[in-house]
Image 1 (cartoon, rainbow over the protein chains, first blue to last red):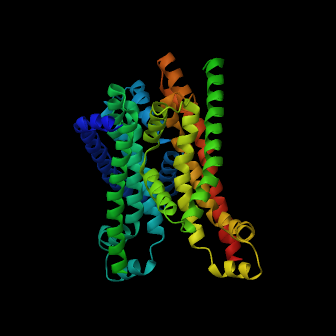
Image 2: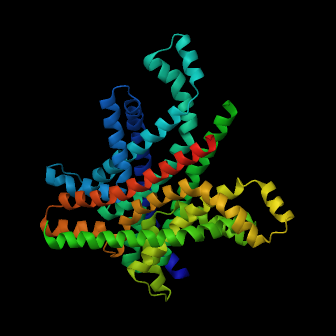
Image 3: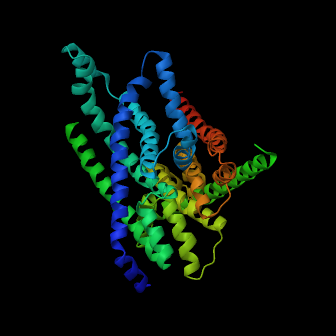
Length: 218
Length: 214
């Protein structure tokens, strides 16, 4: 068993690049889906019913499709419509689009739960439109939605492991290839589990900092 | 789609549903048991459960599944894909269920326990008659939500050779060189199940809110 971990240690370069890819994929997907989601949220809250309905339909559809199936559709299905991807762009696009729906729903929930007073006070002080959103709505939204967004980042990290099926060289894929080359399944996968755990503990630490910040402001 | 494809999808759907139900049925009581161990502050074991839950919640189901499927035979425990799938699903969901049950236990009013004790109820009876009915009610929406999340990760089980809806779709796509239609059929099979659970969760939440308001 010690010998097995020795083999994994010798292959640490492969695991570390897998970990780096997992972190990179997750962070890019989280940032982009947060941006796209924050553009989608106003559409969901729109007074025009067609706009709100279309946004709602997209969000509900994404929430009812398993991520792995969605990744398959993007990678294997879309080429038959003439849209071709390599596995990196397909994986990243799938992660971003899928989580846009979740981010939009998280932001919508936080927005709906926001107290009316600061917004009304902002309007009374002459803020409107984009400036009202940027100066009054957004800071409160970031602080109250922050912890939930952090949980979603953990979800994205775990979803990114599914991309091993389209041969994207992330952490689980690295562990898989070490196990198939040297037949050290326990050592390879338990190391991957430990690395995922570490990654999630880092995110949880960040969420706790944000939560304390929000408590201090209240 | 040929009749053979339709029967492949039907069999896949049965496998997906059966594995999900098995995972849910095992994960619910195991999660409750873990939560009770933490609630009762059992020394050492309570800490181990906290560690187990923390690690399991951070582990992607694919990674856990591959670990179980390849490492268990390596240490002399032979395991077939379906048992590995059920084991991975129940381990994963039990960790999340543990946190849901524990939140309900921590919010449980202490005075009710003391009242039950004062009328001479034993610990087992206290739990069965007083605690369980109330925490089950409080945890229900979150538990149903966790069930919908569980179904959403089941396509991963195909990785070790479980022939579920996703595997059937991949196979038909590979045979016909037209991957998109079978994937859309798979979506049409998963979506109603997940949507049904999400609606059930919203329905329970609304009914409980209405009951509280009344």
